Length: 190
Length: 177
Ligand code: SF4
Image (cartoon, rainbow over all chains, first blue to last red; front, side, top):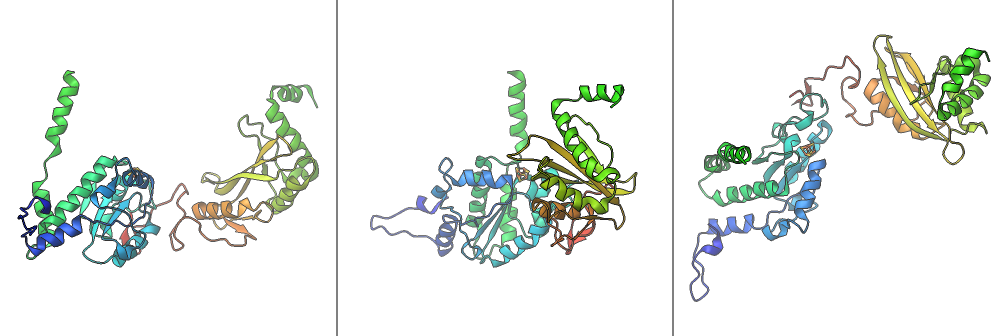
């Protein structure tokens, strides 16, 4: 539930917890670092642009890691780039979030076997909060991933660690298999 | 020209014939330093046999008023494990002067072999030779800046060799899937 759904009294007084306000502020102004690594970056840019308009979520790219709290690893992470990604991650102030976008950064993608120069999954070097599958993921999928990050932030607070929040998030997730089967069945019978 | 060769010449497409004419000019000057002409329809080529003369040939190809191969369109590396050789294939064009094209192959030993650099002839060759070195490991003698261009500088091995085995770790990061 969002903060704005809370009851506002007639004197414009809003009663809520500090945690809530903090989380609401953080999740409504996620600033990803503006860097892209391969074809997925094109899709990320398209998501940033007016058609999908990430700014309505308060998300807009910053050109410095010092000003970012979200890293969207969009594309193929080469071995050469891997160490730079770690440096950039370390330069981001905490609390920071990482979204791995696309098969390449999830697991090596098309380069998983013969791509000698590709890191087979960015989670080998930095902790990843949300993986978005696809090659490339559509903007809707990326937005879905960003909403997951927002959900994660909403769960955080005193007394609940990131690990617990992530676990909770995973527990809440729905197995897509059913939906896939259903769509398949419809497609077959049609 | 005997009859058989003339017939073969007639079968060549006009483009290949142009390459043959260019080849004949080079052959006249360098004789046995280069191989016979190969009338490959997609990429007519010849090989440099005396690779010590490769730079001379290159200058001649660029500066001769009948050849004027002023553009190196591409330089690719090749691995020939059966012959124990590494090589390059260079594609030349003459932009703004002639319509002819030709490819040149140069080979060297697979272990510790070297090929003279033509980066002083065509500046395009500078990065292309670095790439060939990066992927295959042949040395280009006389290259002004022969470093790896794509792989990290401390990468082990040459990835496009047929017998390449990827390293297990790079700076503590696991490389294979
Ligand atoms: S996952 Fe696909 S689209 Fe994305 S960077 Fe890799 S190859 Fe490109």
